[in-house]
Length: 339
Image 1 (tube, rainbow, N blue to C red):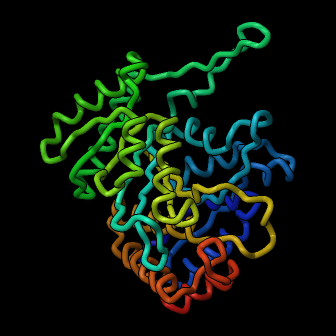
Image 2 (image 1 turned 120 degrees about the vertical axis):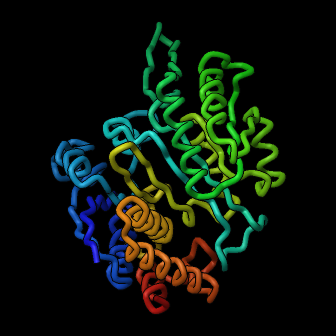
């Protein structure tokens, strides 16, 4: 069985707790992983490092794959988001958020199965902001033909491999005719090379209305950076929230897998946080090894874990955020018992 070296970033807030639970489940399931531990975020600052230390970036470049807990991002001031820095520095331009109903997690919608593909490096998140004069600031939205074509091709390749049927681009090209217009133009050009996948577009405000009316009408959503950030969280609400949705960021030469929720410092250290989102992201990581390295054992371990957490949820073994009473550690125990 192949052993994979993975950079492990525990994060801060609830990050170390949920990461410890996930590592324990992975070991119990038989995943062959060698952890290369590095820091980022407040955890790095507390040890006298930069918010994103050079040795963390170097390790991810060397080992190609990272599993990352949540890192705190200050609101309004302070340091730039660790997630944004990681994606831009390592050119992890494709964010993927699969959103599916889970057995045992009851929501107002059934049969939701959406994959949000988000361009990760451009748009308003480029961070180009200026104060023109006191009291007047601007923020520049950046779109490049290279970036738009790259994420469009990635999305159509993903849809092809995963046997998805339709890609819908959400945009506001009726107003932002140049930036969103370029994104739309590139996506349409790429779509012509994928005749087996239906291509559709929707103006984002109307698309949001359609989403909340019936999310099952959508399959794969392709969005620029800001829209993708907002819509991926909105879609998570259809299936129970950010605590039950995994996330990953892909580049041409590596990937990070991460919990997409916040670091929740208000409940840190209380052993009540839900580790499921990070665990599901780890399952995505195992499947990534299976697909990119022809490692069937990683796929089998991923399926074992998935069946185990499905069974735990169906049996009513849940953390408090899902209506249960289990602690972080007890939920991990419940999954391990069902492996």
